[in-house]
Length: 593
Ligand code: ATP
Ligand code: MG
Image 1 (cartoon, rainbow, N blue to C red):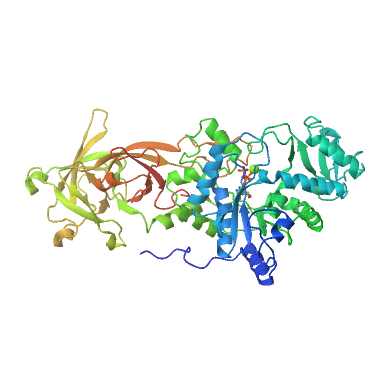
Image 2: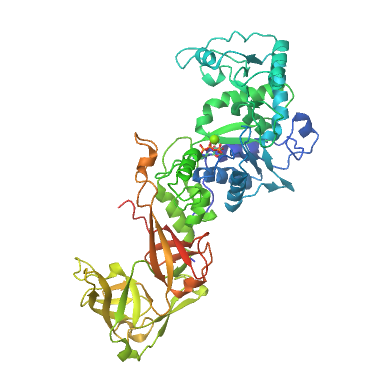
């Protein structure tokens, strides 16, 4: 086996691990009860002590396919739960009424499973949807109103915006701010009963219009939206705002550590304010969840916004969400990425409190490190030109085919050998012949001696060209005693080594050579629209000739094509008799040079 990669060594610590370890050693959550399902304080109190030492959650909105940034969040949330004897909940954040996108829901669940994680623990499936909590959210809103902590504001949206103030100026109180709880309750119930049109009123928390944190200036809790919801149908015409819904979802699910990206840092005071009030009122379980922020993943040459990725799909810039150039999990999977490579990547980039950019090569290096010990080796000629061994028949007999072998993996002899034949007519890379060799060129040119890997040393004698001057066949003479692995193998000195396949047993294949989808490292940060930064050469399709062992390849199988890089049999289009391989990544990082 090759040297162990850092996935075998202990996990590097980070600020989140330190927080969790501190909470565990102090027993912060040790006395909490868990009813076996999400619920309010009374429900949980009726249950036994929580068997999970911590609870985290992954809460996507089902409005698109997950991308590599989500993979970081999944590996983080599920990984921490696994490492600390906890449970990670899979939660769809579907509080926004919109038409159901079952396609997205299914794809998200599939992506999390494929990455190697499960939401089943202690005999329960921890798969939840936030819209199941609408009843409780409504109850929490009425509680706040009753406690004088929320009011119905009927200012116009423009008035509300104007009275919010800005960083320099404090906000001003709404004329509706001092209505009595009874009046607010009645008005809120009218909102719920559908008596008011969209936009006519919102329920707001009553906190502090002069707070230096604008998020604390009486944020909206509920808005009117006469819309069908995929789960609750037409039962509701008021819907909770994300900032109100999210802390409640966490609390009902007994989440201990609610991890989110840095943009939500300014929301934390409201998160705490809301849960403090609901806990004091006896509505939610104690101790309540805490929010912690980490830096989102920014990866060069990649967009991590579901909305923009959707635009690439909808406008036909790529061939779907699973186009191998897409940074979606389905795209990466089809490109040849493995769950282990994405876990390794997530582990290596770690979590920090400061936003930055990760170079795309970090992702590719993780893939190579994962595939190198796993992938079977094979020879493939991607841009084939014929090589004719002029003295073959006289050296070995008319039509002779000489069996050759090569290891499946150079460092794992137990994986056995691949077999193929050597004969008079071979395929080599077009780039492996030069009529007039550039300086330092050590492959085929008239007079040069080169080893055909696992085969023989040959001497180039020239080439045939067509009327346009293009090479149609290269000619060489074999040294019959130089077969690899025989005593005479180094009786003739070769300047270079090239790969090849034999016309007699090679198999045709379509090979898709992918490059980065964007030509600039940060396609969405400059003046130009990201669509203008698309790389026009991000896909090149070539007709290749590959060694016969690849005829057995099944969809999703990964290989190292010697000299070329790592390739995967396409999940969609590859079939026996119609081979299609995608280049996952080159052998080394050539992009920077
Ligand atoms: P997008 O803008 O692409 O829709 P989002 O954050 O709105 O992303 P959600 O479905 O709300 O998407 O995300 C689910 C979880 O994934 C959230 O907890 C979010 O913090 C996390 N997440 C999303 N993008 C990234 C990223 N680039 N890096 C790390 N975590 C991310
Ligand atoms: Mg979102």
